[in-house]
Amino acid sequence: MPGTLTVQDRMALVEIELCGELMIAAAAAGEERLSQDRIDEVLMVGADTSVSGHDHDR
Image 1 (cartoon, rainbow, N blue to C red):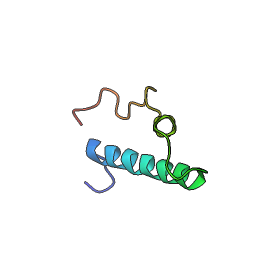
Image 2: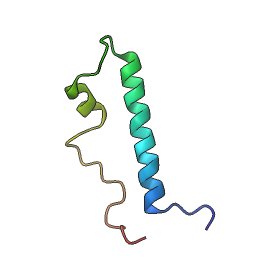
Image 3: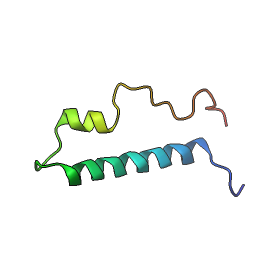
């Protein structure tokens, strides 16, 4: 159905957004590589970042 986002579409959009955030952080970093701590911070590791909640069946 046109205009309907599936769970996979939402996950893909989230992954694209996270990649973009990493690229922005890397471009702004003064060092050659991002530290693991900075990567975790950018990706919000440990934060509640649930995308679809309980609607996995859609």
